[in-house]
Image (tube, rainbow, N blue to C red):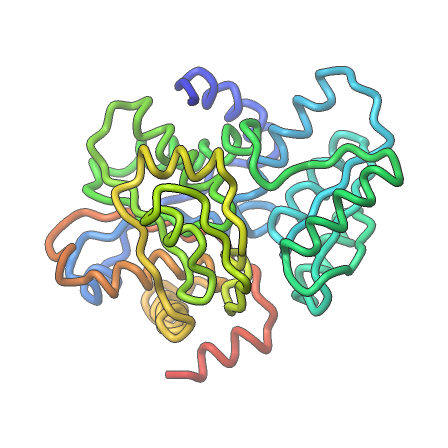
Length: 318
């Protein structure tokens, strides 16, 4: 799907806007999990989440294509929207972002601060995406999908950094929203010729990708009600699923209670603030602690964007 040259070209675009993020082996996490743990800190990007990498590459290529657009529009629960808002502003393109009603107050504020027009519509991400597509037609805007080759190429740069900096990893756990992160990780793993297993992580309350992985075809769900809003997707992307079916070892489902436990563990062991999706990979490792004992493992801490009241409830839960 992607070559190393594709990823290195994307990295040049990404690094014009931000430095590489760190990856650290935390000893307290090693003690808690029984294995050597390398955390990829995507909570250290300019938007606090990995998605900004994809947005930067997508907007750069949209601008370079020379297409005249009245503006761009996309749907999000927050991190993709912040990415598009920041990258569009850098490119001098107007951005409209559609979020579900009742979306994260602090993520909404961040998207506005990055320069986006915010529209609240629908009860969840999938409903917001339908509204965004409708508005794109009505306003003559270019619809930015949540899964696209340029987005995957951009976010793949974090996997490239991790695999180059860390010793050979037995397994990497990656949270799944629509799939750009895990697909980028699989692509870089394959391009480097590594034996590392890639394991996807979803919420038990939003299990569409787990159901689809088991069935070998797209299986949508009727709801996606989880505290991990970055994984709250009802309908998998067919292209992403195809890559995951070919390249992932397995998909682990974690509950909101397990995610909250992992959020507390991150704070206690590393003093890093994580959102629900950001802590999901650690939640999966803790669930599979016996299976992974003594191995060297990578965790994608995909972001740290969470409203303060929700985070405080998670911290107090212990």
